[in-house]
Length: 71
Image (tube, rainbow, N blue to C red; front, side):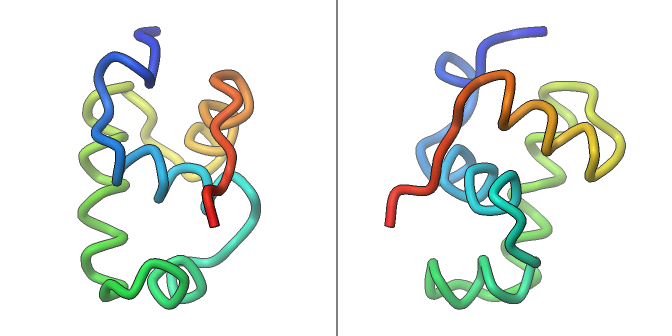
């Protein structure tokens, strides 16, 4: 698995941090001032980069990489 620090954009890291912290797509979108669709787009990009097909995989990735919410 590649490090998120090297291959994710700052916004992808931010979205991953909120999802990993247990926020829903809607809550994440509200926090970041973006649409729910955009949250889904960022998560699809992360899934592709890290071969993480499920939400559980994304949560594990956020924990493994110690990605935390910024705001």
